[in-house]
Length: 166
Image (cartoon, rainbow, N blue to C red; front, side, top):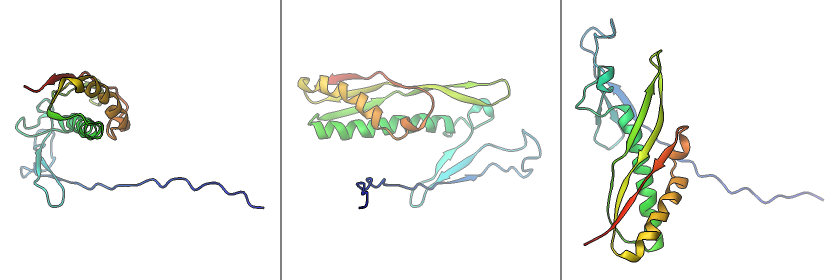
């Protein structure tokens, strides 16, 4: 007699590839800390490149996105996309969404650092008053489902506000 266990559900795996290309060689390479620019491009096949750099405090270009901003943006985007998905599934008609996400990075004396937290502050507009309570409750579930939030070791807090469309 053989012991048979039900097959475990297969886990879907999705791959992501980006190219990060340094564009900041001013002709001297990295011959000194100040001899090169931190400019680079983030590229993915078939998409416009993202002009990026270091944070200006680390000698970066303030006109370009930096990795810290992109991490905060990723958390905000993931939360928003899950929230919209859940709202659609629940019959909540969302007509507007604007998140003012903020992250805090603590820099250590040795120059390393880590994020201490990210705060999401989505301002959601729904079509009718009856949807407000449901919409506000969906943020917790969106946070539980967010791939990016589940992948970081620092707290991601969310303080949403909901208003009714005019």
